[in-house]
Length: 258
Length: 195
Image 1 (cartoon, one colour):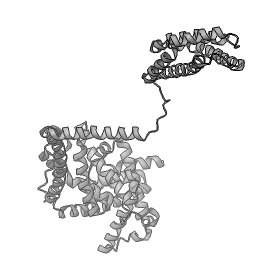
Image 2 (cartoon, one colour):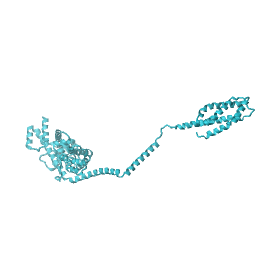
Image 3 (cartoon, chains in turn red, brown):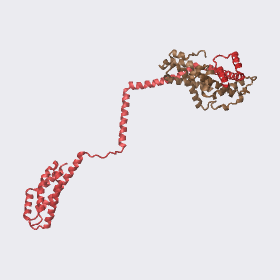
Image 4 (cartoon, helix red, strand yellow):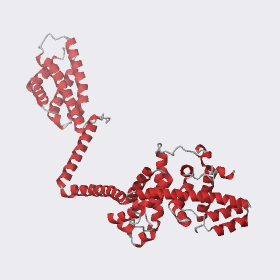
């Protein structure tokens, strides 16, 4: 019953037709007094709403709509022009002044390089230190040269001792010590043989080999009774100018840039 | 001045291809739309905000927004509902943002119920003005959709099916919400009538 009354009210109030008092009264009398009262109250609400509408329309009449429209269009034109001019300005700048574009591009590239340079400069390097392969080879050559030079220096001392020793009055202790030095140099010769095969020390190799034979003989003399052997060695060293040869090779190696 | 206003409908807009001209950059075509719809937009805004200055501001803002976003409207037949939706949304934003709005803080409970006691014999002008002001205040406290329906129905004089189209809801729903709005206005403003 309540829903029916409500439906009648909704439909009556939602009618698009102008109010017809006769028709309204019929509807009301057919559906009871409660609808009658409620509907009349709601109709009064509608009347007041229409009155308010009149007030609003009076307000609207007072407004200068031409001026309002021109004001709206003025703002719209500003927006339209600014958006067009922004687009046009960019296109003009882009197409009519290419040197500016080039300048901008160069500037950007330059800034990029500076940026990268600064980053690389400030960034600590965590890379392992690398040594070029030829540097390792040079170091090995330098080491071999120094060992050869040192071998020649010590050999020249031993050979010089033999070459300069007096014919008589030599103590056995000195001869034994010299023989011991000669043995030590023979061992060292075996150690540097590998280095001497290097083509850069090939000149020293032949001298070192000659020294090796002499040192072998010297290492065998441990008593002054072997005076003949000593004299033979002494003559051999002098004849072959072994001390001179050794010094020349030493000079050569020292001057050589390995 | 009202007579000078060219009143065109949504059908006219579609028929004359006005929106396409606007989308192509014709400011004259847009001016035609402004002149035809600004009064209707103003009345909708005024009905919701109940403030003339704010309504004028919203009217201008509506067309400004319309011009910027018109290219996104795909169906020209939906132009009118779209325009009123923009107005409605801007009004709701305005209500939310404008804390100084006179009626912003008026709640249903704040409305003095005794103001509108009807006395059939005392129909002086002051009484009528008070009553109308009370109804305006009550409209402002209605739920957003009911308020919009009242404004469209009574102030914009739209038919119920047009309101339904504009709001994108069914005709039955519009009628029901309209009835509920009237009931609320009556209950709050004319409570004394039932005595």
